[in-house]
Image 1 (cartoon, rainbow, N blue to C red):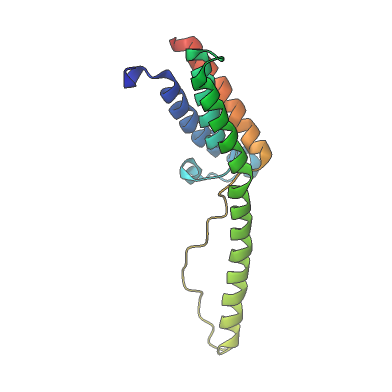
Image 2: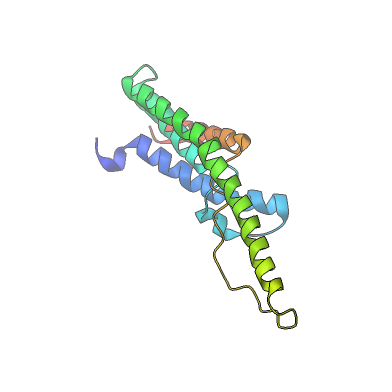
Length: 158
């Protein structure tokens, strides 16, 4: 299969890009804060991981049949990725939140223990990444995004 005509590959890439870009207006509607950096971040609504793997599975099913071995492989891969997005990665993000709280408390304690009259600003530091995983609703809508986008693209180009 010619790489440029590999429908499952391009459907997955399109789903990733769409899910990442759509995070910006969704966040703006929810918080009234414009954050273009969301297009390059992990976590958030919808899950681009879920969109990518469901687009892949859907595209493989549409292209090679839902009874094919390739669809079975893609479907199992999709289940594992979506489960991981809500499980291990989500827990890692919650642990990062707690570690950041502890780190902030420690820095505040150290600064307050120093000379009270000469308080210095906290040194700049990079906080641990807290948005690693997804809430189940984010994974659901990421999956729905991938299925709908792959089906739409299949109808348009196949």
